[in-house]
Image 1 (cartoon, rainbow, N blue to C red):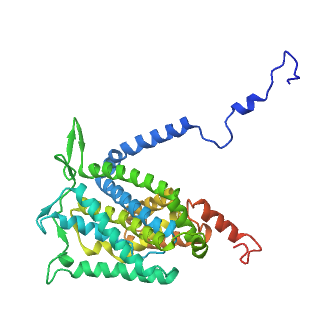
Image 2: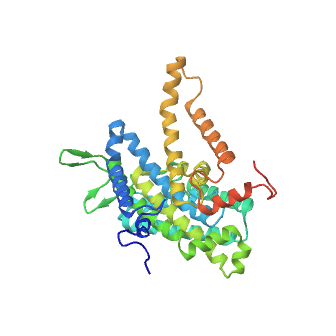
Image 3: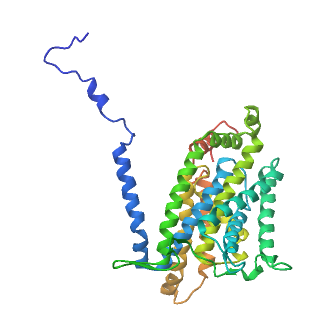
Length: 381
């Protein structure tokens, strides 16, 4: 029963009509998505004005996003330390090169080869995961490191008695992507606009990246993703809850490897030349650093880490040398040395002051905050 005066209006409904603090309106979210899409659409033409090399660097950064997202499944979701992840990248790259080059005389379309490369890389992921099911931590890292080096050595030496990989010389004249007569490896003219080869690949890679992000988000919020998270937190407790840890670990290795295989196939088509030198241990460490720096277990954090570690070294490469010439009249320290020094310093500072990464997942952020509280055996740093 309403006891308010007849001329007075109740104020109960007014606060309910207002949006809650911190809740984003759907219209605002859609506007943000549209603005981001427009920015990404015009980005390659803006970079072309600076230099075509920056479009190529952007394409490589997107490939590193693929690799970081694949490794994030293994390391971030399931908690399995993998130092040989670049081997799956190499398997996918060589699969595409062998099936789309004059090496064997095969020139299959890319939309057939990429799934084949993902399947073969997935098989290699299962072969790696099966013997390491009972290993964790340092022991797992050593085994996966050895696996990555074994794959690289095989790629470097399988040129005799049967020439499979052409050894250290690599494979050349690899076919670019083609869709109904449209070749990504050649520039095209649309009206008065010239679309270069790197720009062609940029849009293709961007579309695939959006699909991979959506797939990762769905995986993270699925029953499988929660099972991986349970294994990462406490494998014994996960097994006690009825989770088949063996199958879940194998699935994590297989899923992560398939992303690496797809990225390798796209790298092979973009470069049109590959050799074993592109799949060394340093590349695995770089991809792992992207995952750790961005925030293990967070899809968007991993992307931020991949973009930072792809762009910042190149920016330093183009600025450190000219800066030394302007200040001292000569190059005192090699730009590559300064680049690696700053890269290592950044990682050390991140581990000291933000060990969960730039954009950590909610679970890992809560874990680190709990570990830093006084009275838990560690105290505040």
